[in-house]
Length: 92
Image (tube, rainbow, N blue to C red; front, side):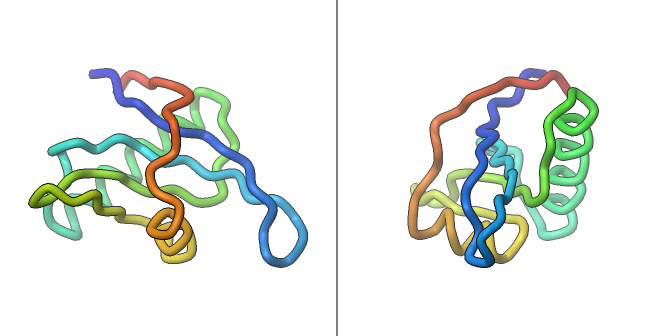
């Protein structure tokens, strides 16, 4: 199955850079434990393909609203900025 993802690099509040990935979970997201497992699998697959990832999150729609699940700081950032444009796909 092909999964869309956005792999981005942004300046952190401490002055360095953070490489992060946001995965298009569509309707695949579920319970917290299922989301955690899905995020772990997708992050591992993206790292295996050569992407550097410091933080990661899922983006999905629930009741017509975009939701995020993942690293707290990244989720806070995405909640203010929205879903980034997809830059890659991975097979899982």
